Image (cartoon, rainbow, N blue to C red; front, side):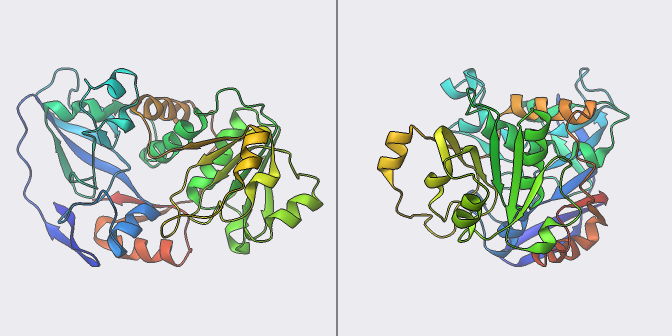
Length: 339
């Protein structure tokens, strides 16, 4: 049995681990698939505001219960892991907004994560386990967390007219967001990226590709007749709002501050344009448990088409190879499926 241990920034090792003991009233979960994302890469290379070291990384994954002291989760149950552990009693939790819980801890950030052969979950952590159909492909179930983040962001705009939507950034999460918009019936879904290779084959069906840097977006959108026409704008990359985006928004349009910004993330915004255009800006970080369960259900029913993604699969021992693939943009998604 093995685990990945991030001892410090850029100090990552794959080490042997003993089989964990079964927690009282808890379960042991043998990992079947764990996804590596660009947030993991950032944590390894630069750290993260929520990272406490040393740490076992990994916050996107699915596994099989192999030992249980809880009759509701017998051995053989397949479970996807909602990465947030919330208190369940605060006002945010009572409203279903578990991502806003003031005592939230996150697997792979400030709580040991999923990059290991077997993960113990104690009685309090069982609320993070969401059963999934045993026949479901673990690599598909491992996409529930990023899809849930997209769903959580979109639910902050419940009254949006499903007309023109622009996603900036054609990485894995940007493409998942675009696929979700297609499923929900948005009339025109555009995904923009300044790197031609990012607009290659791994783009959802029904999504219009736009080769453009953020600096070029105003002129290109104007030429497409989309000035003051976007009902939804989603930045799925750090610089996704680093342009006068308000000029492209339709009155009452929504802007999801979905991706963290580079550096301090500050820029001047024409506040009067927001005021007179009645634009809605909504931050979104992570996802709520209900979003996670709903996203897992969408994937299990195959109503959101994620077949366009062709993740590279690796073993736990080759995690650094996966990090390199993401850094060099040779893969949009990397899945660990051998532990």
